[in-house]
Amino acid sequence: MPTSVILPVYSIGSWSANVDDDYGCRWVVTAQTLHGGAGRKVHTTERPFGMGAYRARSYLAARSDTLQGWCQAPDFAGAVAARDRLLGLFPDGAELALVKADGISTRQLLVELDSAAVRLEGWADAQGFDWQLPLYAADPRWLDSSVQTAGPFTVIGTATDGLDWGSGGLDWANGGLDWGSSGNGGVLSLSNPGTAPSWPVFTVTGPLTNPTFTNPATGDVIAYTGTVDTGQTLVIDTSPFTRSVALNGVDRFGFLASAQWIEIPPGGQVTVQFSGTGAGTVTATWQHAYN
Image (tube, rainbow, N blue to C red; front, top):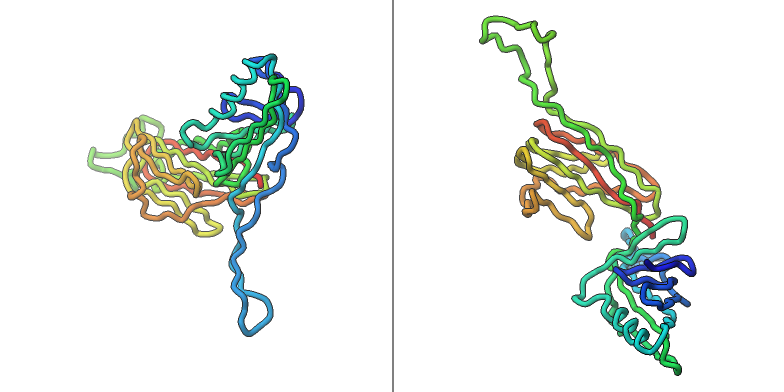
């Protein structure tokens, strides 16, 4: 297991920097651009006959960052193997989590290789090299590695909404009248102390019909039309970067009657009201997000 030599430790998959790794190599970061925040996308149009400009809301931009440093290996063969490990980090062009652990918190940024090439410069003694790793993050937010959870709460079974006299009278043997609940629901409280917005993932297990999530403060509604049967799981991911609706892993995006996505604002909280009919469970999960 890699041994930290300097904080923070940066990790992508099985590769780490600021550590002595399992192969006897020391990886040290000498410069990086990760600690600054992402830029902003500013939308303005100059006012042709007046002062200043018209503007629309700005948003965080995607970010390009660089990690650079050196690697010292025990011998030439170790340096060649270390080079191969670094160049093989993104073999299929996928995004991977860059994890930063500074001894206080652990956060992750989803990255891929930027368009620039990975740079390597070998040392004269052939036992190490300087390296530079260019990275691109379409989602500019650092996410806390711990996942927050609200729920699960169990939705109360559907009521009959009245007295059934068809059996010839009331049966008090079971302790009285149980009216249950109709239009069942519950409240989920979601908070985000970070500096960037976060979006929750809602998980519904059946049996439930027409599960609906509402933000009473804004009126935003996410409404699924259909039934989640016993043994089935509906997952609604509200993030603009991974947005999806799946029932047992099968796409059901078209079953949304309303798709007004619910955001947890930076440094704030949101209360989500659930409604639906049935006796299943509802859970919300999310991560604190930082610029």
